[in-house]
Amino acid sequence: MIRCPVCMSRDIYRVAGGYIGEIHRCKRCGYVGAFVIEETGPGPGDQHDTDT
Image 1 (cartoon, helix red, strand yellow):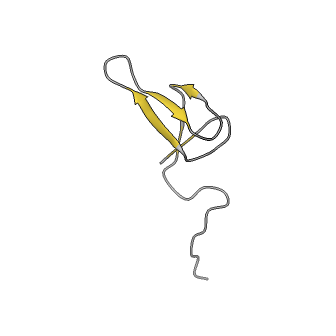
Image 2 (tube, one colour):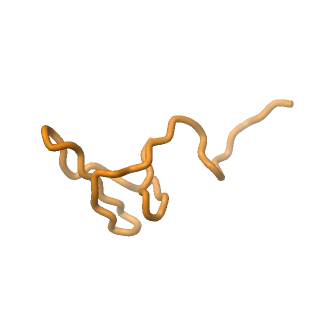
């Protein structure tokens, strides 16, 4: 899962890709660029179950 580095939104999509790399655009704040934040697990504020 990827996030916008400016507003931390998940509403981000790839607009270009290929040999030059990927360019993403955020629908929330309008960020356009190659740098995005990639998550591998639940992020801050995400709901997840914990059994104790």
